[in-house]
Image 1 (cartoon, rainbow, N blue to C red):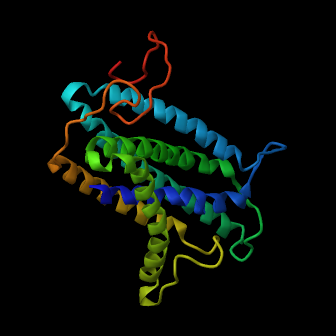
Image 2 (spheres, helix red, strand yellow):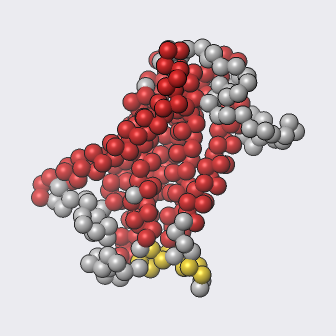
Image 3 (spheres, rainbow, N blue to C red):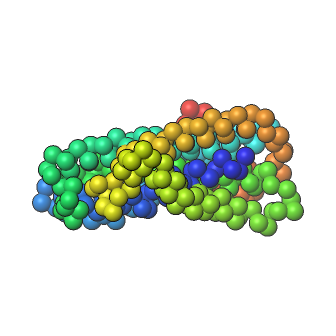
Length: 256
């Protein structure tokens, strides 16, 4: 099952590469105020904290013997975020390329594109959802399902799997580029981002993520789950560390 987690790492990697490269040459101004690019990192971290709370609430819906299914359900939710992120990124990139062509900026990669950088905000938020939920759920899955002999290595499993995804992103760019230039067509990845077809690459990732979700659901249906041996103290069975909270506080999920 862990092989299906790798695609999440591939999609996650584009946030620190192509998303930032797109943002670098877009309009950062709001009125007369120039917004620094790190604001997206701040907003992304805020979104991650909210998604962590969301998953904690989701996991509370699973009680007793079904508690072991919380991480797989969360992973499926993260994969849906992956698909939505890629689709959103593809549509925004199509619009960005349209603005570039209208203003004849194809051969001017250092010029600022007259399109607000905040068009990228939705895909950054969706990527934050993918990153946070997948990290929590993959950690919870390995914690519950890894054999006791591997317990001391469990903390490294999620990082290793997502790390393979980051490495796989390099291979995916190479493979997609080679396939795209068949038949004498131009490679989707050119020397400048203005001449590249990142929109097509994002659509490809969306399709791969959708296939990956279906494969994960199929594997998850037939996977033989171990009964969780976690206790109620320390880290709960859903893989999310306990946090001090008000007993009277209400969860914003449907199971509250």
